[in-house]
Structure formats: C-alpha cells, structure tokens
Image: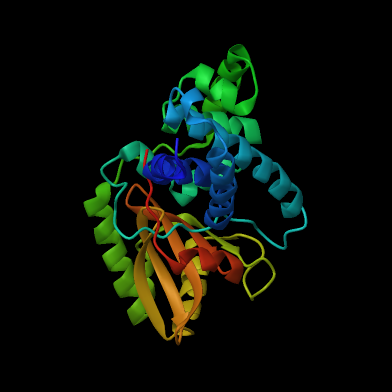
Length: 293
C-alpha cells in the first residue's frame, strides 16, 4: 500500500471526520489539530488489516478527540467568562437538506452537548448523528457494548429533556426573520427589533477576557435589543454569513473582524444570541469548512 492510498482514503472521508471531531470538541481549530495527528497515525497503518476504512478512521479520530476534550476541560476551568463553541463558517448551506446534520452543528445543540460528559458526548454524536453501530462505538470509546448502550440512553434522555420543543421554522421562515432583523438593526428600529425577540431572549457572549463583552448572560428583550443596537452602531460594517448552518452577523471595524452574532430562532422569535468575540475563536472563520454525515 502506498502513501497516496492512505491520503486518498483519508481525504475522501475528511469532511465526515472533521464533523465528528467538531461536534465532540466544539472547536474547529482543535479539530484540525486532531485530524492532523490522526492522519499521522493513519499513515503508519497497514491498510491490508483495515476492513472498513470509515469505521476505522471514525474510531481513530474519536479517541483523539476524547483525549483533546479532556485536556480542554481542564483549561476551561480557568477560562474568563462564558465559554462558547467556536463558530463554524460554511460556504454554502450544505447541511440544510439534512435536518439531522443541520441541527447537530447548530450553536444551540453544541451548547447543549457541552453539558454532557466526554463519553456521553462522543457516544451521542456517533450514534444519534452519524448512525454508527454500538459495537463500532464501543471500540471508539473503549467501553463494552452494554456500557455504550447505557451511556447512549442516558445521553439521549439528557438531550431530549433540554432540547426545546418548538415548531420547525424552515429555511424560508428563518430567512424572512433574518431579513427583518437585519433591517431593524441597521436602521436602529427598536420597535421592529423588539417584535422579533422572545420576551426572555438571552444574550451570551464569549470574549475569553481578551475584549470587552458581558461576562454573564443578559436576559430580556429590551435589555438585549439596547445592547445589540449599541454594538451594531459601533461597527463600520455588518455582513451576513452562514455559521453553523444558520444566518449570522459578522461585525467589522475596518477590515478587522470584531465578532460574530449567531441567533437561535424558535416559534418565529429569536430566543438566544450567541456572541463570539474572543479573537482566538474568530480565527476559525478565516476559511469556510465542508461538513458531511
């Protein structure tokens, strides 16, 4: 087997492998590191011993992602303010036709997955999003099939209990709300903005202590609207981008990206704003990514 064949197999599955790792870690830059390390390990494998490349590589990257997740959890204990996942820039709505994939990379779901243990998160992602068999998952997380079934049930119930019940908005409805939202914030229309916000809308900002941002969530339509309009006025340019398969606002001062604002929409109202201002996390938006399931 040649090095070219190793590279060909890995490259073919890279979008799927990246998506697995990103959903486990919530970080695009750390996912790149995991894939790089995993490829070096894969390059040393005798391909004649590999029955199923997809299963083998999914197991390999999951193990590396779990190691990175446990190390990262210790670093997060010293993180200043709220920690949010890194935004994922997509060049097109390549997940919109796949409802499961679209929801799985949403900021709301990634925030929810943060409440799971590392093993629960990996098992949930591999089973519920990617549909791997329990025996394949057992090999990836180093547990028995019986234990994996128990972890999967526990994780599924945890997610189900915390996932909001709401009518699917659909891409067309989301686009309309986003268009109205853009018009309201760019013209300073407070009344129009308030009509789009849920009464208990929440604003959560991640600055890492490196830039000015609210270190605790801000709750309430009037407070969030005022905060949003003040921030928008302070920036020269606002662009609409596709982050985590949803419309998001990118705020610039000159050519410098200052922050990304992702909205969570339910029942026709914006219920959450996730604001990424940590400059280290904004580096992940330098280039669009491809995801797959």
